[in-house]
Length: 471
Image (tube, rainbow, N blue to C red; front, side, top):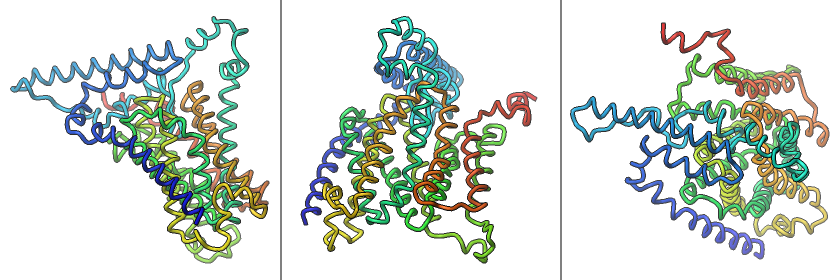
């Protein structure tokens, strides 16, 4: 009963906090007048002030503002031309490429080059060569050791590689937690610790993002809950590899929601990544090198289906998060704080509905009793590690390092996560791998790497799309 009361107070606290954050956004997201302001001639004025308020950016901010102002003038000119060609001077036509304001009219290549770096559902302002030069002129002897590390070539790349390695520990440690705790208790304790660690950033959230961030948190919760459940009867390595199917989910949502062109010449890297990913999933799920499982579909477990659903949850969360952060990239950590808080709340509801609260021995499944029971000390340490290190601290490290490398390079580094998960599963759990694991896993990792390519990389094979259109 004490545990139930503690969790009830926690639930009430989160509901009140999230309700306060959501109320100011109701006008921004539901008011017809504000929806009209999501027209093309309001895009640049909305984005530029948010970028200008981002601390610690000089030349990148100027280039971003110049770029958005140029785009704004072009769209405005298109609107005026449309007005002149119509019989009514008050009639305007919505620009088709500005149907999704948060995606910044699909000028992703321009933004990644001169303003915003995005990878794995996180967007931050980039630091270009001019920024590094300006930092260097201030005197390297005045810089702290941390600044020197971050401004070096190795520093940010080492941080991203470390983040990928730490992410890989989630899967074997998740299996360890499930051995001693109900999946709902393990995931709930992990998310409570992560949300407490990130709680200071909650109050820095732009109110206009609160509603969308809460929706995003629901999909994040879907990813974490299905990941935890899939680890009950599916190997951690396979869960990690199947979770990398986000490489298909995100482009699919861009096509369905943003109406972004996804033809073979428009996005050949997406088609290559999707093909490799589907082949990898097929090898993992349908090929049995021992030949003892009978029919191919007989070896598919319910946990495998949940692992695919994990990719849907995380992929949708990445998609929504990038839409928000492209317009205001300084909101990475506040949005993350809302996501884990909503996930914590949903996991609390999961614990209540799971039925273990009030049963004999369940008093050790909650916080802080979890760390006082010596019989589940290993699981408690795994909860602390995954909550404080791989969920909270890792996101902070990721956002710190991401702005100092390109999106493609960051995506390649972070794509190694399933490989680290497989390695830790072998080291910690002595997990054995078959030929299907090696081949299927390699194909999925190659799919993640292929997704970091650009359409221009395929011109020697497919030719230029612009040339085809001119002919």
